[in-house]
Image 1 (tube, helix red, strand yellow):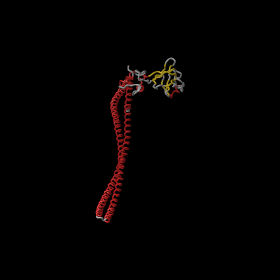
Image 2 (cartoon, one colour; image 1 turned 180 degrees about the vertical axis):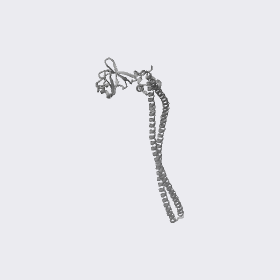
Image 3 (cartoon, one colour; image 1 turned 90 degrees about the vertical axis):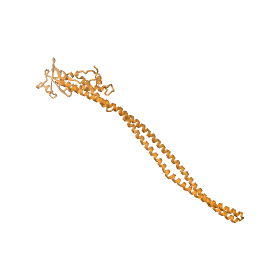
Image 4 (cartoon, one colour; image 1 turned 45 degrees about the horizontal axis):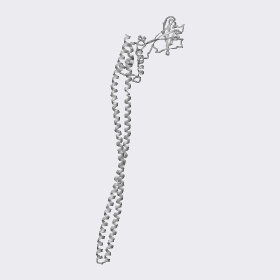
Length: 385
């Protein structure tokens, strides 16, 4: 006959070993518990199949020493020297009367008594060789194929009990799949890292916005102002040059007149024209000096524009670096989201498999529980008729 582990595996489709769910050690406990449960509901007429005889020597009242195993005592005998006399049961409260020769309840070798108290059993009169039949709870190991001191007709119920408890163990473990828990932890890790990366992206973007805002301020205020100043200065240069040209045109006219007087040998008049021409020339030079000053001013503003433009270009470059860093972080987030999605698909797949297995194990557990309940009722009912 197959051992109990093989029978349970046949009913449950489980494969049990030292590290399975349940373990062989746990199955041994289930089988032992099942035998105890069955014995506890058996009618009295069947308890003899689950009992074993123990021996002890009766002691004086107050010095009880025989410890019971289960407390399910079927009968007690005290030997009178020739025969094992059946003992009648009394309450522990009456043991003093049974030990008093003058009391009508006195226990004699031909009419012995027994009582139980504080997990101890004793018989009176004392110093007698005694026996008692006590129901025993067997220890049932997963590798056993039979149960000693037990109803053969009830052994299959112990196997059913062990199978039901084994499936309950599997169902409990299915509710906390370690692989799913590991995948959920991995998803949480990836999500936490995505949140951290998102914070870094915000930091980079904020820095880029700050640089661009400063660049825009430089363009809107400093550069625009400098360009306007250049335009004004160049306007002044143009005006001064026009005025200078006018003065120099007058100089030319005066020089022509002076030359004519020189040709006429009128030096005095020629000198007058030359002095006037010098006046015009001085005025023209003044205008040229103004134009030079305005041009220098325009050049200074132009240099400022160049410096500002270079700074703006530098700020735009820095902002571009921040944006590139943000894009890199965004790429990492995409990668981590993909990883999290992969774990989510793994969880979904495992849940699908676990759900199918859970459903089968649950139905099989219910069926075996029903078989066990029906078998136990038949066993009890059949012997009660």
